[in-house]
Image (cartoon, rainbow, N blue to C red; front, side, top):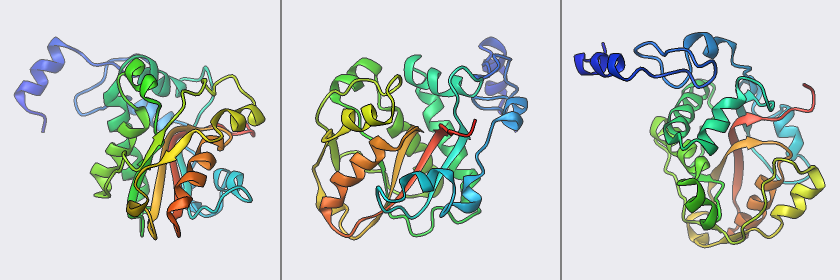
Length: 233
């Protein structure tokens, strides 16, 4: 049961659903129950080895499992989750949505054998501009639920790439080519690593990151994100 102080605080400073803007009830986090029910979930956790997201990486990098919580479409209600996290300094969204994603995937064995979580790094200039790395917050939320360690110091983003938002697939690939530098290969060698991002669109960023991490030797990869942009919508 929520504490008395929680009830008083909620009365004095009501919280609102990031999707619909409605007032959150005590016990609800980030999104209300109605929006949670209507969140366009991908269901990829039920077939993590073979789904639309996993197939996007086939022939480009070796992946074990792939999943995303929901389908992302610009302008849709669900897209507000990402927008508020990235551009409105709502750091709690990353932590809580990461935890929510992990809880939903736990029962299906998605995290079995995964030894380390590596969030997609941001350039230092972007972190200063935004205040945090949203992928790191999502990874930390996942780590809190699963108990898997998060490593944000094994690889660095060494150039300040332009936003990927308005770029097509080939431009995205060129934009992130050579964007990462491996810093601690010994932490990755022979391990199964979960790569975490906020939204996966073409997979170019993930592929570029995996290419760099592969230099550590004998690394297995799985991929997890909050949003996934499908070509079928």
